[in-house]
Length: 450
Ligand SMILES: [Zn+2]
Image (cartoon, rainbow, N blue to C red; front, side, top):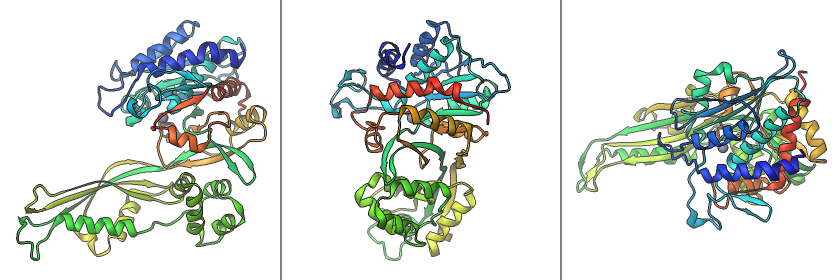
């Protein structure tokens, strides 16, 4: 069966069903109910005589694993990994029902179309086709479909990693987020995510002395201390770290001789970034976060009543760290920015995950490059380093080479993707599904161990 006919007859109906299942993850333990979509995929495989197994901590939030045995037990294992939960969508803002899975103008509409049910449907269809082809690939191929990515993977990837590692361990993995088309000064390009920043969430507390709001003379107001801290941290800058990866992203994102020159001159990178921001704010944000520790206040709390001087205030910061950066360095950066206020602040860390990066010089990169040279001729692959996290980090942390990639059509530009992911009118063009399915069908056979 050609990728085109497979997409029309099997993949699109599967994707529509996954969208209609509406496995909305609100972060509540009983939301998602992803077992419905896991069963949809299990049934799709079963109809084609392919066995799969479910693993779960909560039976309503199951995860699926299926395996094709390769010819050579020593050959590397390749996994296709995706999540079936989606974030909420308010239909009132959309041009079409976000959970109908309607096909309109060659696009499948609905929440999850790009994040990442379209990829999950392509993974499943391509996996099935490899299994049915009768031509065994060199190494094992795994299909890993999980729940609960949108809330950190407690029931999904993290559960699997901690409890069923032997069933899901692999040498190479393809997952989200990637395959976004960009224009560069050296021609069209498509992104492949090779790493993610680390997460370091911080709570900063200030204490004051309660008193009557009618007599604030020389009072110690915790809310005032917290707001001074916000101003100081907001003004502070963190150091740029120009890794080879950031240099490569810079070459792809900056355009024209002035931006390129500024971006290479020591101390002028931020000037180049400001110019890029005026032209393309999305790309500027990508590049900024890839090249420094970012500190973003997310929650501010303080005080309890209008006429009481607050004795407590706290701020939660979303800090994203670069490879090698630690809790201690985060603490140092915050204390440095606070200056004289540092001793007034109690700082605690409530979430930590280290930054993680995969090598670029790998058989998976080369195989992808080779297939793309044929199905997306003239488009070169550009590595990306992401500020956000995906489930791929759990495997990267254990040594798997993980790339976020899909062989999308040129219609899926970085701009369009950024507007659609977690946004309104999310949709994917069917041509992207065809190209990606072809890529995923060929990959297990093209992947060489060297
Ligand atoms: Zn996702």
